[in-house]
Picture 1 (cartoon, one colour):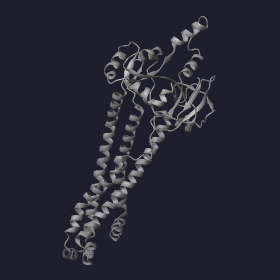
Picture 2: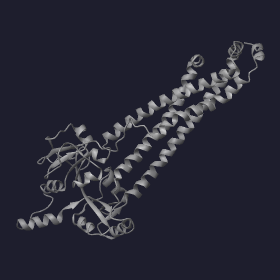
Picture 3: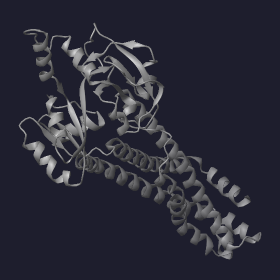
Picture 4: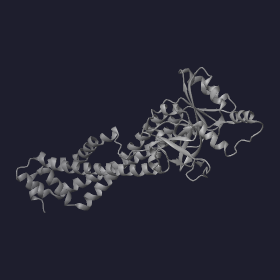
Length: 406
């Protein structure tokens, strides 16, 4: 401990240089840690939200758009498809499950999704309060939605037309909150879930379909005109992956998107930026360690008289080398702790911005496995940077040091 205290005193003797080295090192560690934290969380969220969905079916358009709209709810669907498509897909022997989704409305930017109760079981969702919807115009709120909007079981709200935060309101109809989901870390947390009939009836009341003939004819016309936005499909066997997408794309009104392929393509595109940031962090780290090496070397040469005095007082040459190494390790580890704090602070700001945008959910307190390896990496790099100056201190001749002008 006395040697560590002495090393710290030597560092404090040059406060400006020490602070500059500490700042550059902390910035480098923060860049590396931030990229690791964000990248690992995004990959984990993507895999969590895929939830075994094998295929997304929607209107003709971009497969990437279908995947973003149907799985992650980060985009708008390319259009609607007839509700009859559900039965057409369910009739396929390679299909195990078809979950219809109806989009189009929102609550202050939080998306209202019309579906079936099986959609919750896809993500392992469970109720924290209340019950599941039993009738149209009843909703179950995701945990983030309930917290952000301050809604409780029994409250009512007006939906906004469209998926933007400031769309026109459906002023003559309101939804009743009958349940709130427990936090799951999945896309369910930021959705408002209701029955398919809620979405249909809400838009039918606004005159989306004309009435002709008697009540029976109107019911038949309404049923045939009903549409859904997307279909989530699960295969019965691996053979479905080879045959079903081609069958869907052969239909005149349907488009298929494989979430596993599209998400891999998305992660590859994001990976380019991730690699650039990692390269920048590594470059900053190498530059900072070079400054530590130069500073320690200059310090050893500057304090030659002090080193000679320590040798005369009985300190062995390895003690002097240890003194130099202790300065490097203390500086780099302090910079690492500061860099990790900066990385988690930046992650908290990003998580807040994404939450405001109703986008992916990130956790500022998340600790990834790679982050834990930064500690031994920092210690090893500090010892590497101190190797040269420590060798100079180790090989110093006491007689020559005492004869050197001061």
